[in-house]
Length: 380
Ligand SMILES: Cc1cc2nc3c(=O)[nH]c(=O)nc-3n(C[C@H](O)[C@H](O)[C@H](O)COP(=O)(O)OP(=O)(O)OC[C@H]3O[C@@H](n4cnc5c(N)ncnc54)[C@H](O)[C@@H]3O)c2cc1C
Image (cartoon, rainbow, N blue to C red; front, side, top):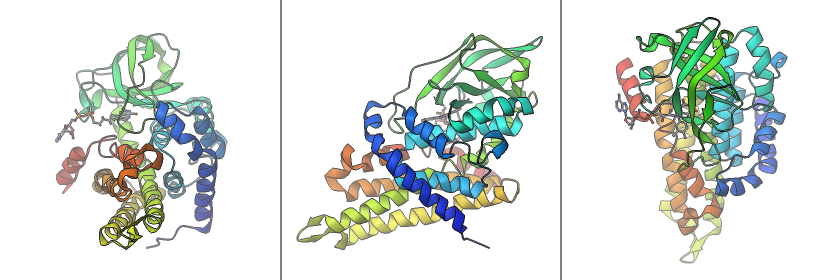
């Protein structure tokens, strides 16, 4: 077994941290307070090559392997980039663009991937519906084939980048009588008649990401906007799970390193009862706990990335364990960090409260912890 990153990977990680600290982090507080999306930072991620890192160069990507791609997400978190921007990047690159790349025709790839990899266009993915969350197969949005078109009717909810996306990958029933086996995936562009999005849904955390409903009312799209094969949509959505359990989790791991560094720095400086709080055992334990989370989470997540690089089929049990662990446990280090900072930890200026709020999404989005436990126990 080889647990080493290559020299190039480590240098690249350092470069991303340097870039993000200089170009993105100073802008976060203002956008976080306004709960607005930072388009400029998103475009900068594109210019730096992060949005399309794993796509082949021929499509405007960076040709990177999976480990390097996951490392990039970790680097953003470690630099202190907020969960809203990293979520927007994750939904854009892995849930939208990667699905088009993986299942699209050559014409679809050529049309969308360069625009998405550069950040010229923003992508989103619509799977969840008001009545179909964990049980996605009960979705009600339909896509009826009429001649050389499909007509979409229905709606989606909680869609990251929904209000700002130029293109959406949308899952809909092409055979409403069936559950999983009746779902297909489509590309729907902004401006298509009958397609609209709702306003940003205000959230507890990841506040700079924009989340909304998507509405389809007799929305006619060309039949060539079907992605892959009809009725294969559910299996296609499952394939994003590998990214969901690696690249989308990586920023939470990076955030734990960011908190660790900030906590150590603060604990050495802050004095109470005549000495640095770093000398108190309860503070030392909090610092140890944050490190323990990072070490364990890193092992689980990079194993999934490594298997994907090796071309091995996803081990669904390992993927569910990784999601559950990072999801449930990422709240613990951020809680420790808030407590360690005392009253300052509760204040906006010191970041810890934002990371605490952002981390609360980890056990919900992309499949709740209850669902991961269900998968784990079923596979056992
Ligand atoms: C900020 C944010 C961004 C999101 N981004 C996207 C996106 O870009 N695209 C997208 O398609 N979706 C997105 N989602 C949706 C997300 O994936 C769903 O919220 C999540 O899968 C849970 O679905 P639900 O909210 O309908 O909860 P429900 O499925 O209604 O679950 C409610 C509760 O019941 C529990 N539960 C449900 N079924 C079971 C069961 N069988 N056994 C035990 N417990 C169960 C759940 O664990 C949960 O505690 C996003 C959500 C959020 C909050």
